[in-house]
Length: 386
Image (tube, rainbow, N blue to C red; front, side):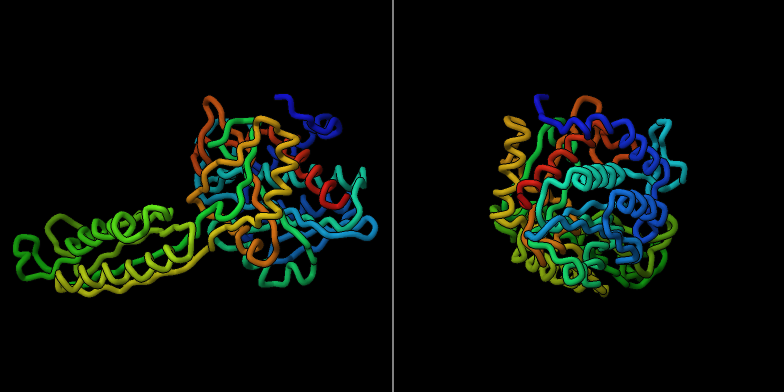
């Protein structure tokens, strides 16, 4: 690949791979990462970090100060997904229905590897804070850490997060300024009518018809009301109505997600969804109860911190640095940390033949990434705290 990987991190790769595969075999979902958090805390203490546990229930923060200087934070996520793994690997999940299907096991080890190397070499002046966050997968562990005083207790002049990315070729990396990942909101619409016999639908007020029409009508919000220059996605992912073939149900519901890369489009979709669903319901003489829950905000990378990170990644990856990688419509609760401190979110490619996207039951983190990502994190800290 031509990457200048730190020799010590290459030498320790077998140990780090064993760590990662052990975490993969013992996945824990959000706010239940007790085994993972204990392992992280043990490794950080052994390296000389001051360790604080119990932030956002299972979060772990390590701090290391070497002289006077600025401060930098590095964040990794620790939680697994509530889904089944379908790959037959020696290190496959030992807990049915739980699976590290997004690579957070790898992220945890990458940050641990970088933290231990920085503690051993001490080639920086200032304060390093490493943040191991619980519950990224839809539960808002990042928001919980911020709300519980993360940056008041552990001041950071800048903050950086990262993720593996199967859509980028292996041996590449990317960071882009401005909106880089979408907001994430959830909605549920309950339609209530009057049930009856399917052979006499004129005596009923059919919620199934209203739900079907609403699901189709909602697609017009993005295609006809959101600017073509603004990225937005509205997905109806569930429709539930009825119990058997010859009964018109009294009620049913649909649900899904809304994602956008700017707050104007986000607000338009929130208002439009309620308007469309109540309008369709009125046309079909049923009622609609609309629940809209805002989740993660748009992830926005700070221009100055992005430029700094790009300089490090450009030196390390050379032609493999891809600053023009398009924003993702997936969401990430590191966005809450970026609302409080300037920073950036880095992507490291692990795509290749036979690979698959995250959240796929056959996914696995590529262990070859560990020394690559750890090297990038080390160089980031050494340059910022030079």
